[in-house]
Each structure stands twice: as C-alpha cells, then as structure tokens.
Length: 122
Image (cartoon, rainbow, N blue to C red; front, top):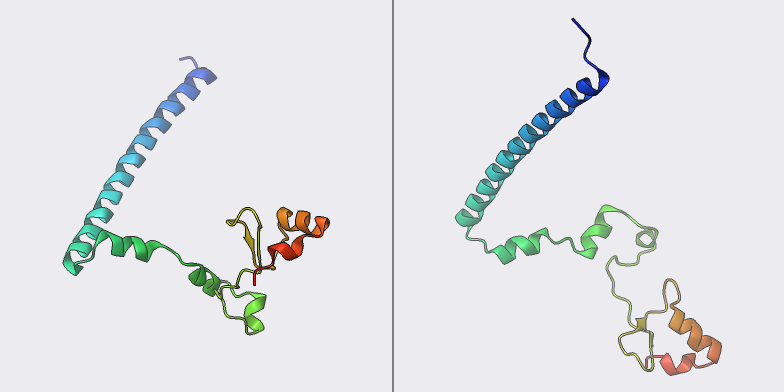
C-alpha cells in the first residue's frame, strides 16, 4: 500500500472542513430561527410594536457613559450634559463648536485671520 500524497491529504482535509462548515451553518441557522421564533412570540404576547423593540435596542450616549466612569464624573459634571454652542461658522451655519475638545480647522482659520469674534454666538 502506498502512502497518499500531501496534495491528496490536503484535498481530503479541505473537503472534510467544507462539510463541517456546512453543518455548522445549518446548526447556527436552526438556532437563529428558534431564537427569532421566541422573540416573535414574546412580542406578540406583550403587544409590543417593532418601533418599541428598535428603540429599546438603541444604546443612548448616556447609557454608554454609565458603563465606563470618566474623570469628568468625579468632578461632579453630569454625564450626557449638553454644552451650549459657543461658535458658529459665519457662512456655513451647520459648522458649530462648543469651545471644548479639539479646535476645528475653520476656527483655527478664523483665529489666524483675526475674525474669530464673527463666529461667537451671543
């Protein structure tokens, strides 16, 4: 009896791997189908709408900060507190800056030209 070549051994292993991957996909599909069926039943029983489920799945910014304490929190600053706009671009009203964080390029340009006061929001 001759020993199979490396190429034939690799081909056999690849074929077996494909068969295993196919079985894995089938099992995952079956599991997913069961989970979806359970979710549908719960939604139907509770009278929830799709919008209720979608809004519950959205993670708000304040929920993200609750899981990871920040240095600001220890100073007493409220997480999720919206800082008012301090600067607005004179020509492009959609460009705004609170004066916190990295300085936008348009602010740097206005400052270099000595026109930063024009962007200040009253």
